[in-house]
Length: 130
Ligand SMILES: [Zn+2]
Image (cartoon, rainbow, N blue to C red; front, side, top):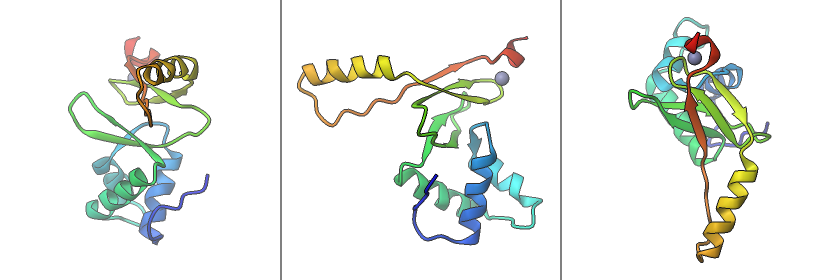
């Protein structure tokens, strides 16, 4: 994956590496906390700046947790949507392309242009519902 968001710094790369290794959506505070014990701690301000740059570049997806916190995950370009556990936050990439194509066609039929569709599904994962 090529990531070309903003000015590259070691802190920036550290945040991206953590996001790339995560199979969960992460909050900015979780990212800061997970890096706090590493050889490259990163301030919360730097985490937020990096996430803002990645969001503007379209390389991360954002969802809101049940507590209203914003959570981040590097975008998987093969899959277009996520199935997200609302309890533990595990994120499974899924394809909703057939449904999105129908929605886009409906929007176009109503004369809307530059259509953006975001489909994320929240549910309880098998571990949390066991
Ligand atoms: Zn779960």
